[in-house]
Image 1: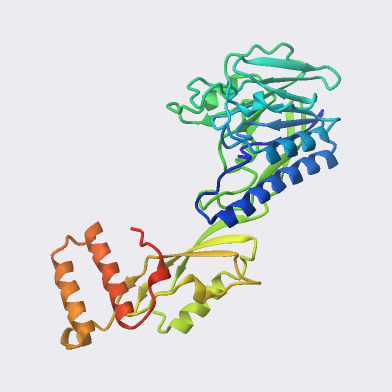
Image 2: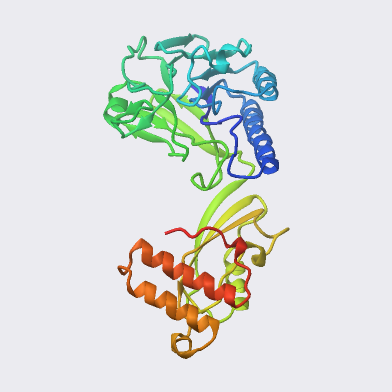
Length: 376
């Protein structure tokens, strides 16, 4: 039996380009902190083997602080054998940071050639391969010859499951089933898969260790536990410092802004200051009924970052506006005439509908600058 720790897709030095420079620097520090927390946990668990299944780095450029942190933290796990399989973001080539960092002796980096490292004291053979370029069209799971089926055989690799046309190491379940490994430590998918099994071969994606955007929702972490012949017991541990979440809130037929705000606040009470929250508003609203992020609240008890996507539909008192001689009435009739000439449910129609809503809000002296871009 071997005690293992399995992580992947760390993406150190990710630019976090969608936020302000100040927040980006903070998120970079938090990403490094999540990784160091994971390594500390692996040490506390007395892990004998640690696997990083690709994309340790986000690109070939790595800051000096990150390099120093990496060498220092990995060096603290002297009793643990560490195996890294470079992925599509950090391929092992002449421009790779793997060539410029002086890793501790307990770290093994797999290159383009498939290889096996025998660990006799544990009765474990660790196999692996790394990407040599950002494009890897072969399966990283096939092409090995198990040297000793009686030992614990583990494969560490980066690849994409169930997409035969992938350029990121395409893998099929049939290949996993026929591989003969006891455990395959995969990387590439940023959502944890849980421990899966094909024909007695266990495999898993731990997911990324820190979400970096709304396409990576939820708390993130890594896997730890034991591997033995015919048995794999792994648990998921959270290490992410923050999380991204998306929720949909229906404000249909709510009559006032105050009621709508209170309803939204009641729906987001479980999200605290470690969360970046995207709220998708749906339902029918009256004229002038737009809500900005600042109106919901901030500080303790609220997400540290709020984003609103307004997908409500407008239902003002059309009869009154039809007869009104005010500027609102003129604007409404002009927009209705334009909408009547649009194909129903078309993109042009929905853009016009949104323009009508924003225009009526502006004419009600509502500030619409911070409402964000409308999405179809």
